[in-house]
Image 1 (tube, rainbow, N blue to C red):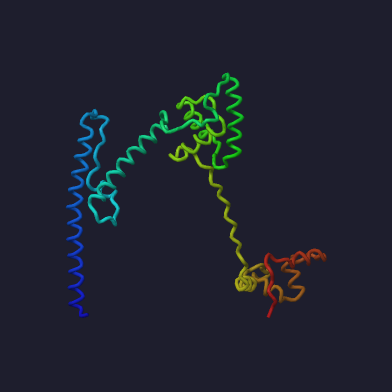
Image 2: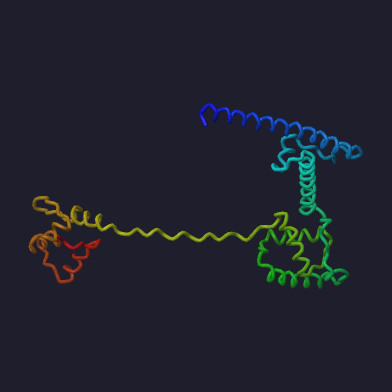
Length: 261
């Protein structure tokens, strides 16, 4: 295929994609008008403050599945997703701040009666049972408060381990509980391996002694190659008579001496 044919193919493909996108926008625009009309028609008796506000066209079409060719199906899916988002938000608000209409009290406590003092003792014992059986619940001060307030808002005065379990799962589903803190393991300290070449260079070049007579500087390498009298004078001093232990200590340089060549 020549360069001209290749360019023509790309142009034709771009034009086809442009026409398909234009056609889809027109189809989606018609479905969007139906979505807006449907919302308004179903809320004509609802007070303005409580009405659902339609999404704008871009946000509404963003809820559509990319691979769905049928505009009616695309529109229905986008509308259902929007309404589901509203329902979930309303459920979240009622779960966080009000009475949760979807919470069902387990049969284990239905009809159970006891005094306030007995209920406190019973609830505390059952809460410990719940904590022992539910490793994912983090009994932080905040989580205990959230769990307690949720049960009180729902009128639950007597709670066994099943009640706590259901309340925990409900609150966790909406992200209203703190997770266990993540333990960060300290990073192992980097181990710096000694560089034999660098140690050898240091041994040969780093000044470790200076002759007070003439100021001549000596590296450990040079010092090791002086005669015993010069070594004694430079290491221990001009008039000091070294002991055996001094000689041993003087040989302990702060780095390993390489084998001399």
